[in-house]
Image 1 (tube, rainbow, N blue to C red):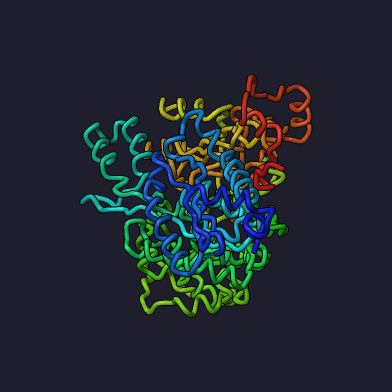
Image 2 (image 1 turned 60 degrees about the horizontal axis):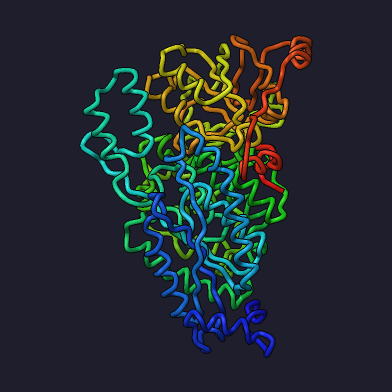
Length: 554
């Protein structure tokens, strides 16, 4: 066992003494040492209950004759970090989490790991760490928040963000704003739509790293506790079989994850994170591959923000494996891909497919919402190395659009213009210097997109940025523009009222400026640089890669 490094032989006497100082007995020390990687804290709604999940995982490990040992990692709530300097630390925290897990796992020689993530950056960070460390691993998330009907609508966090725009536009009054505030987040768990957290927890299933139901069973259901106990038991089998993360997260597994991504209509952030996880798993993944898979994968689900359904609806309809079952009908899933359980993906699907089916939530493969997947990568003169849009959440009339650029060098500038009524139908809002290095930290633009939607402009106005978007974003929101402005990408040279052409069906994003004019602008434009950066965020800005490479720090 890997843990023999700290517990076998006379030379391990001091190490055994240290273990015994914490109350571990000889029999506990002799068993496999299973690290329980818990992201519990008291500031993130998706993580407030993870002590209970960890306790259940430990029960499962103990029942299967292992010794569970818990340690914790940080987690940032994107909703709370949104719209201020805190959002610079959201994406960048992904690297901190992965690095800290590597430090703990390598220093203490765990035999295997059970990962307990839930929210946006924590899930990919843990998958990155699992691939990097490469000891037997199983994932069990905390599960999604419920969405409850308040008598008018099924509300979620996005409802609260969009309510701000509606209030600023005098569409709703303060009483209605408070009503939405009080009802949008009714329970613990990751926010209830197909936002980034739930996207990544679902894709953990598709990658083969998590059990059926990991992405969809609500946080407050007893089935979630049962799932955690089963994860604790499962890790002992995974250890016995010596199934390693890089045995599971192969090229076929990433193809499966991208296929499920397209069918579900996941967050655009999933592309960024899958690129980063693939980097750690030593698998080649690029944006052209994303488009190839999207072109042949039908969109089967319209979950919030793209439609009216939420995660508890997807769970009731059969969950991720039901979606994969439909995709298998047209041979879109690599059925021989390995999973944590030593079963193939086909065996996992066959074992867990339920007779329950809700065709309103998960469309049959022969009757999809669209023939193409929920995400598209756009290339062109404005994004030579790519940009990403959640096309399943774009109104039909905005799939092709040409309009004048309204240019802002920060999220705050753009929000002020939107709230003041300065943005008109047909405009293309451009927010730059918000990329991985230029932001730094590649902030999510949920405030401006929600403001646009709240003011009734989401079917008339596009937003383009070298930053990124929340999974809760809807509308013609195109992010991850690469190269970013700080790296002298074309987005740095866009002028007010330049015409920008968006053609999502043909995967194009173009700045309608002549090459000679662009060359002149390159010569005369000063690229803006953030000054006086300190601490971790300064180191991150110096070392982070571009969005098309997953914004990884090497």
